[in-house]
Length: 148
Image: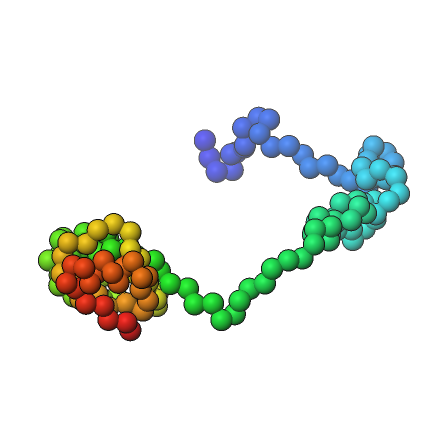
C-alpha cells in the first residue's frame, strides 16, 4: 500500500447532488425546489419563529412583568451550615471570607443568613443581611450578629 493508491472504503463516499445543471441532469428546471413561493426563490431565509404567516407565538402571547434594576441578590446560607462549618474548622468568627474558603459563596456574593436548622456553637457571625429567625437563633446561642 502506498500513499498514491489510498482510496476511501467502497460506498462510504457519496457524490453530491449537482443541482441546476440543465435538463439532461434530471435536476434542472426547478432544481429540486418545487414550484413558486418564497422557498423556491434565491436568497430565501426563514425568519426565526416564522409560522407560515400565522401570528407567531412571541406576538400572540401578551407582554408582562419587568426586571427590577435595583434588585439586590443575596446568597442564602442557613445557620445549620454555619454550625457544620464551625464544628469542622473550629471557628468562633464566621465571615464572608471564611465562607468563600469553604466554597459556599463566590467572590462578589452578598450573604444573607437564614434561620433553618439549629445552632449550638457561640459564634460571631458577620454578613450583609440576616432574617429575624436567624438573629434570634444566633443570640439564643450567646452569639453576636454583625451586619456588614
